[in-house]
Image (cartoon, rainbow, N blue to C red):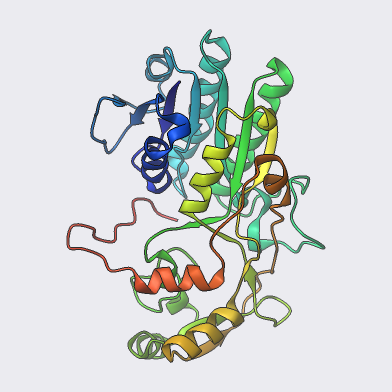
Length: 326
């Protein structure tokens, strides 16, 4: 088994490679890491190919002799790159994969941006049959195009591909910084822009956390997944015959409820909270298909997500770096 991993140096890529190398089920598997801006160390089981997936020659060389692809590379809100890298890059990967004599399985990591996550109202749980609906911007559109392209390659060529659709992926102390009123906020919303500037500085200094309200004025529910649970799902899907031409929601059992977050932090850490009205919509991704077909179960619930983020201590060699905008 030779697995091509795109985006190998990213959050999911690093955890996936470590998880696979430690998994006795894949003790003979080797990894070819396709790296662009950054690189990883080569070992007796890891080799590195450098270049961009937007270059067909690079993709052809990277796929030579590969049996499996785990496709993680993407762009965020970078319109100048997104079509070349995310869309054309996936097309070249799929074209080379379908023509390869050694290729056996293609795994795409998708995102809930493809179904609009909290931008749109949903009448019920978000299942794998929920229609695509990108929110404004290039990133969400690219996630729709990725999923549709993989699906159509399955229709056209009976390609053995599957998509694991993940919401916002957390690791280390990420979740803690999603709630920051300071400049160190991770992702969005950017809370300091939603309140007066003086209030934002005070909330940041006092450890006040935002209690996001949805368009109906109720505490918002939003989907998350911890990187460890996503990696476990990828490993469960790898070489699994039940995954062929399937889409799976990979997420926590329950969405994060901002009221429950505020209450738990008040009890465990004495933090206050402030209501933040919004026009966003609560939603609930249903992960029962992955549980049924992959025999997968997420370990992280709300309390573990919070406790692990607040207990994490960064070393001086592990600075918080956001590698992409958006």
